Image (cartoon, rainbow, N blue to C red):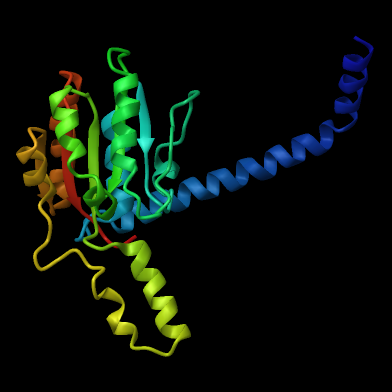
Length: 237
């Protein structure tokens, strides 16, 4: 009790500093929210689809759900649009290690939450998906309710950035950074791939105006107790 009283008195003495810091952080938070809103608005109709719009649309689609983000992207930008407000609402982050663990790990998390009423969402990089694409069969076979949103920038982009830095450092042609890295010509149809494994799929979504319906339709499938995949063609970042 004596210690608690001492800490209480110490906090009283620092109340002015605490209030000042709270004010500073509140201002920074408001400025960040305003910047995010401006970015989303300025890029709302861009094609390929801007990630700011994609994350805004996902946030809008799940706002009335008890959602859990099972995995995300290497940039972590999605967390700015889907901030955690509950314990264990964000479970993991894709690290860009070229291991492909995001998809199966998300399925494990969704399996653990099966029957809980929570909506599990996996924001899934396309390159990472290709390492463990056959895990979609497991999701279909065991009826694992999971919303998988594939961000198809059609590149192993983490490596593309690395290739560029190495080319500059070693004085090699920078334009070669995409060799063996771009996932195009042909582009992968992740929705068709999902269907081949027995998973409901839609896409590739290339028109921003089609995003909302695609997500809503997929969520209906997930709430029926099955996996659903939305393939979205997005900008590099």
